[in-house]
Image (cartoon, rainbow, N blue to C red; front, side, top):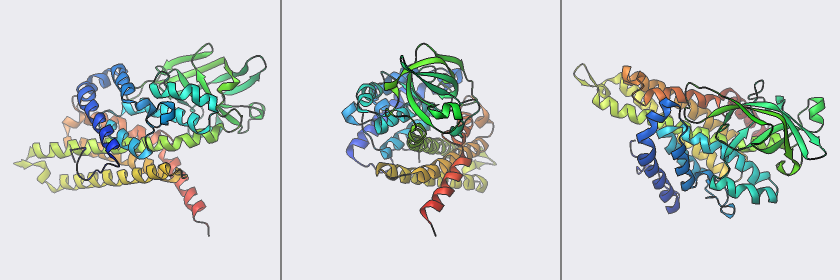
Length: 392
């Protein structure tokens, strides 16, 4: 289990092998030696971001015609798993960014694609998705941020978004707002704008977290923020919620892949430690209690990975995959949480120490059960799709 390139993990192509080898080299050379320092300091990994730009990760799923790598969701998931096994926070820096890019690539006007996608792919413009509000998390239909038409410019936006990844370091966000009649009647008419930082766009504060360090999470205020009509994704009002939900499919595949990475890292370190640590005159891996834990941890990793692969293949086929992505996200995130907990128990006091990685997995894993839609919501999505796809 310790070797990312073991025979059990097959490559889809030679190109994929080369990409994943490059990722492995980057992680070994530029990330592993610095993770503990950066994570404990909660310091934004500026050098790693520049390296990820060079690797093309900010354009991972953007089409080559716009300067991206055009990777399949299947390859992208493997990249996210590898990076998360070393430092999960790095994946958040490009995940939210790529959801924004996906919204433009799938639904934007040709002018929006030609202008933004090359800049997104190169990392010249980086950002993310601005959906969540102080009184609205999973229930996106309850957003209160509004965009009112302004005859002289386009729209004027007012409202607050919170827990926005890349909110401080990013410069552009796919911003979900109410438009048209929804502004006055409080109905569900929503639109998605590309909001670049400028007058009226204020980063009010950086939000502190118990885990997921390094990446910035912020609260954003929009106070009479002017945005031109050509920044409305797709050019027409009223489709923003659908655009955002479609982007969350790849976002949930990303979160599920993070879960596999964290679960696998917890397992790998537990396997190694169990062979070194001795009690009652023998390595703890020879105690049945530890053997049972390791076996369950290994099953979770393999099952989670298979669910991610299934969701990624469905996405690559262009099929609706909210159920598959929801299943992968639900199971893989819970697997990460359970494996992180079991790893701490196996490591004992060393697992609780900030000198080792286990306590970081333990702090990072809970986020996966919350982010990109809570696991309770995933169960609802899965159930509804089961009924919809299997009518009597």
